[in-house]
Length: 344
Image (cartoon, rainbow, N blue to C red; front, side, top):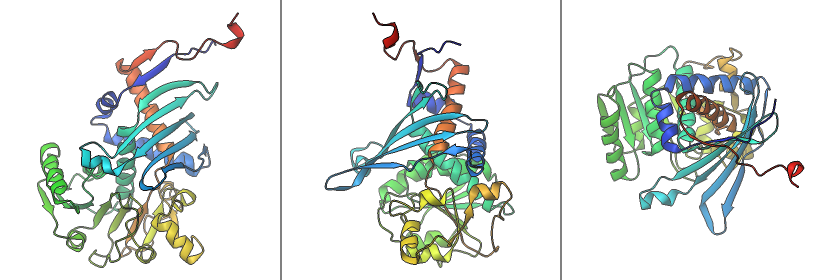
């Protein structure tokens, strides 16, 4: 069959609209992608970090991936993180994504990926929380870092924990915490109470589930003793906890080889102890019933996801499907130049 050069372009607002209210669908896709990856049906090169001279904060990351199984999709996400954007009133992160034909390699879809980046991260966190708290009724959650990622995590936690009524917040910027609190009241009808903690220990003492989503580059969290036995930490930003804290927990990851890179807290532990034995298993191995959710019920579980490119392309494929069904996006009928073979 003749291949076309048609390219579908989907904007960020279209992505947001297409995914609105579909939290459970997204969590399902993320879970299936993890399983396919665990079964070895993926290709996932290490992410490539573009950094800038004399600037340790800003970076742009390339995440190429192929996901087999029922997905059979390939692509790449190009995501920028510029924390100082927040001081200008714009989002820290922005991203684009390309899906390529697995038959010809030609680009088929181009879309904004900032919404996808947030929702796949939040879905991964909520899936882990649901898995690690499968036998518990969760009524409260702590969010350390009051930005877009933790807001999406809050949204997805609500989708999997119907009894979640209380959110405890902490951010070093009190104005950001106040803004975050107001947005919760505006958008999350299920939440009846929002508390801004006076410090990290106070936040840790109020809930058994905590999500860390900050922009810090070096560890600062050296004491998790206020947490109750059997609590779970969603280590989303990966660089908050000291190696000593990581070694205290029951560590579950998305992919050990990927998460032990780029000076994450787990990478620092590996450099310190010389092995990865402190990582018990992957989340997918739990989903596939290869490992128990917890080694002991009293353990502090720590879920550390590097953020795999397979999740981005899996969710982008879903967005592409929704866009075609709804007639959304702009179709460029001839994006590529005329073939050299046809040129006179």
